[in-house]
Image 1: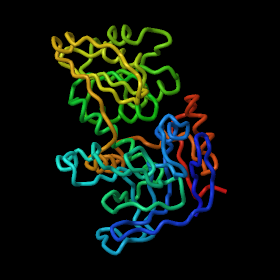
Image 2: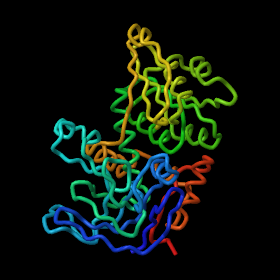
Image 3: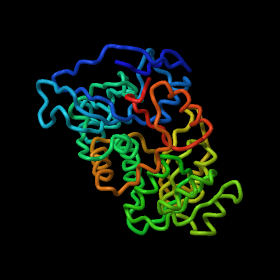
Image 4: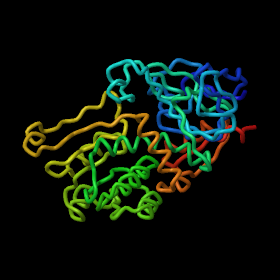
Length: 343
């Protein structure tokens, strides 16, 4: 089969490799679509070190073409979405339901303690426990189930409910999925700070009550003028400057949520007295759980999340490096790899 293989930092080769054979508890999926993620970007650029050669790609959906001997509930021809986080199911985190914090997890093409070949390929093998049927949902929409599940988990971490105010710092693909996730929870008002005018326009179309251009106005002052301090301020950029902005916007008793991925050596100062006195929660959110993945597929299947508007490029395997260039320039939103479209 053809696969886009990371062979070294900054080098991806499309090559013929052996088609994987599913184990007794696995299925083989013909990949219909796979999203390009910032995790892939960091692996490609070496800021997240991985052993090569490795097939990346972990936001995927496709059709089952082979079923392991012990698999029940799935059949050849089923259309499914893939959860790339394979927990060990025996550690303490797994036993309490925090499968994303598994001490021994395996990742299919993404970040994890152990990483196996992912879905930038014509076929990928997946444990049957890690797939969800998608019915008539298109593959390109279903490929967004994984990032949406991360957003659902993040929204759970924020504890936002009906009528709670939210500020989102950043409106890229994840920020726009978070916006819709919070809208589904009844958050109000929701304000977005975003540099790119096209992303601000799309955020308004997707339900943002206010949109701020941080190049024109200080976002903290602008949001405080428009809505005041908020119950939850969510940073979706991954920079200390914008994390500080989110924290300044958080009301007493509220939550600052770090969703964007900061540099591993990044540091920032916070006032422990203010956290104590104002009862502000400073929280992180990481990856997805098996439960949030199931909910993501349900939301996409019922049309409660607008996914198609986030896809700005459908590409073949050969075009993945060019997609990384567009991501670096914040050009467009979501790139979706269609392996069958490759030359």
